[in-house]
Length: 132
Image 1 (cartoon, rainbow, N blue to C red):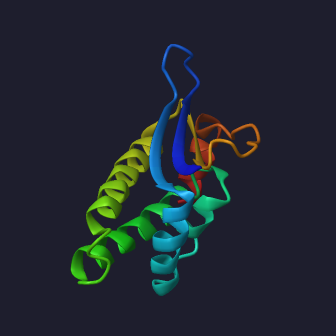
Image 2: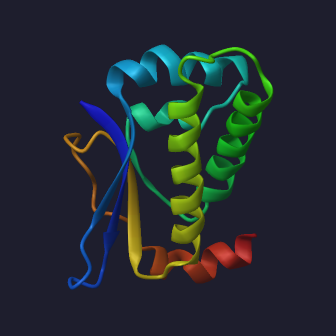
Image 3: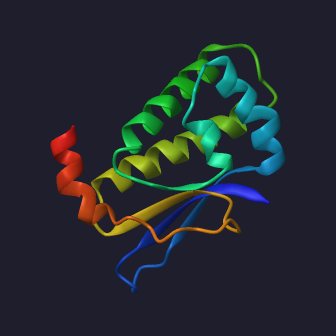
């Protein structure tokens, strides 16, 4: 099984998109230990899966940035660094775009996990903007 980001569009003419993050094995062996080293709390939750809300995105992007800086500065994890950096860069790019969208929902996790009906970013965008 794999963990990824699923972007679903309200406009049925647009195809949903799947952005892979890691296999379950790779996530457990590489991502989670690094997250534990950095005391990250949002990224490890990717494995259990949930519908992202606009309020989640700044925290997730912050942690992805911290993870990116850690991997780019350190000499550890050399064997997996290029693959992790590529996935982190793709996630940062996609989540930054999702923040701007009003017609998309995002789920992170395994595609086979049961999903609750997504909370619409469009419906939450005004409330989220006021909260920030």
